[in-house]
Image 1: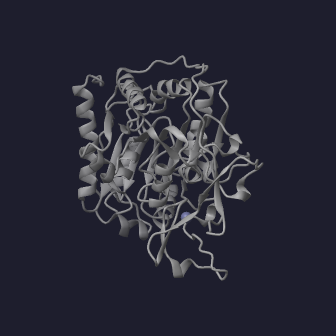
Image 2: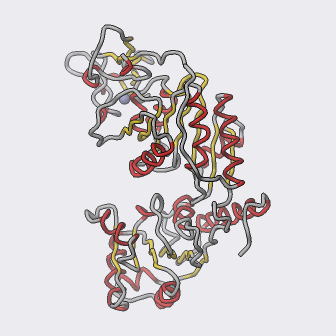
Length: 439
Ligand SMILES: [Zn+2]
């Protein structure tokens, strides 16, 4: 029975069906010609989704198992909340900025209010959640932490389990092997939320601006469906989308800003440098002069991440650098690279000094002692969010290594300027609030 609490699943997704359940419709006719899927919210022209037996289905969320009008969703409402005692094991200490956000989250969760936390890269977001999660669990509430990115979920799960050592937890994502079971606390991908209905009193979405959540109406519908009526929805981001900012400006969403990192140093401000004809040069196997000088200079203090707009350019640059820096271990990595995980690990363990990469490493990975160069920062693949995230790879650890961020371009864009302005703005707010010590 517990298996169905707050769930919205098809018969084949259920391990053990008892006599006690509710049936919810899978699709709803919106007009005489259109029908809406009630798992992912997508509207379809009836004619285009009609099967030979007269049944309608949803192609939009079919990767989660086919929803059609010949089936129903099985569901049971979550029973009343029963306060309980929850073991909490965290010895760390929050900084002043973290404490302020943590307190505001506690209030929001209590009031059933939604909120966006804009915390700069490397601020220490996860720790700020612990008190609120603890408080909610203690009140008998059900809590989920979701992220669009599996790697974020995989990293979050053990950290949260360690803080709530005696709490039953489950991790849900597309490739999981573990069977679903009811727990009061869970970590999942945003896709998995499509299988919940009025389940959570507190739903936290980490990296809300990341692919594939951003601009994805299916996943956003899933969030709205997964929360209870008087629940609190918390969005966490270092680079909020314009849509989220608009919601906070219109006061539909409360906003808390954490403008400074836990180590109280300001965010490294990117240096912008013009690199004449760099694309033409590397296509012809030649090194842009300024780039080589810069690499030499940055390698004195730190290892180096070089972001490139395309795989071809990454590979061309790798060849050129191998010729010039024959004694320096380097490699390149991109999304189609089967050795991707191994290479990233090797870079973290200092087996390489230079890693040439695509935007796959713009977030989610922390390297010790690195500087960053974005080659072709004016390319459209580097959005404001991508540039801010990339700059945020530098100086994340407690020990200062004088890491630098360089944006190289052959035509400065508004996007580059906006990214730099956003970083400077956060540093300004951090100083004003006394959260930054000057070096
Ligand atoms: Zn659907």
